[in-house]
Amino acid sequence: MRPMQLTIGSNITSKQNLSLQLKGQTVSFQDCDRPFFQSVTHLHADAEEFLCGSEFMGKYFTSVETFDYRSKLSAKRVDLTSINQLIHLRKLTLRQVDLLIQHSANIIFHNLTKLEDLELDNCRIYSLEGSLTKDLKSLKTLYLHIENIYNVFYSFTEPLSSLKLLTFDTLQMFCSCDNAWLITWAKGCRQVEVIMLGPYAKTGMYALEDLICLSDNGIDTPNFVKYTEANCTTEVGFVLFVATGLGVLFFMLLVLVHILAGPYLLPLYHITLGWLLEAMRSNTRGRYHYDAFVSYSGKDERWLGKDIVENITDSLYRSRHTLCLVSRHYLRSNWCSLEMKLATYRLQLEQRDILLLVFLEKIPPRRLSAHHRLARLLKTRTYLDWPQDPLQHQAFWDRLWAKLKPQTELEIRG
Image (cartoon, rainbow, N blue to C red; front, top):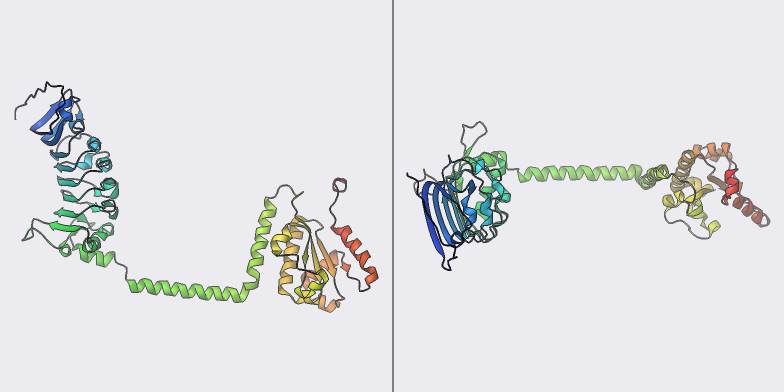
């Protein structure tokens, strides 16, 4: 075919919609910004190369609404991403265009929000996915005849909210669970009519159940529906069985933990939290909210008059001292035993005189010997006895206050 030279001399923009058909092995333009090109609304280009200099010529037809471009799969690579600048397109047809060699094939159709009809005829593409179709919200008709074997991902159809007709001509897919969704979607989507065309079908159309795929070995072509049933479908009964079994085991574990360690879990959690908070504090002065934390049995509340602690573990670590009110009730209480543990852990951690023991009543040594932690504390620490004689109460409070009162800066330095 001999080269043809076309001269366009007018700089006046036509008010009429122009149609332009071009055919040749190579169609190349100069002065591509002329108003003539901006007046073309219907463009048909049949050329292996369609250029303005070294760029794709299509982007200069800024008003085009219908664009039919036929190239050759063997053509040299020319960047086609400028198609996404043709924002007035309503129908786009690409024939024998190799999108595999495009560095940014996923953005070629971006910005085409008015596009209603898209045809990819005898083209090549790596896969069909949502990044291709993200702006095609007005697309109603889609025809796909892809030369190579590819994958169709679920995200491909998600942006196509206006799609009415989807035609696969000679669909060639890999045997992959990534494509398994297509069968269920094609059967269940009432909004979209899905048509399968094939060269070997008697009527030109074939059912989804007859679709084949290419296996990993590149040779076998099993039935795609049977492949997905064998490799991609998880039996509902099996899933329910596993979920039920795990649920029963988890429930049994919770019951067992509750029986064995129920009363201890929350205090142990706060013990750990207290250690962490204590380790993170760099300045030990001025951090206390209370002078003393009082550990006592609920049956001895008359001695205090009211319950002054709402959150035991939190209050203990916010207090300068821990005051344990020991009685027979105290020794029988699991909760008080945990409070004692918490206080001794803190005593070991801080290595300061923070634990005070007050005996509300006389307790025989044989009963104290059964409480090893308390017995060890009595060997190393002084303690106070609550006097039964009311005349001695004031002296008791004075001794207690002497131990609880905050140290002055002079005492701390000394």
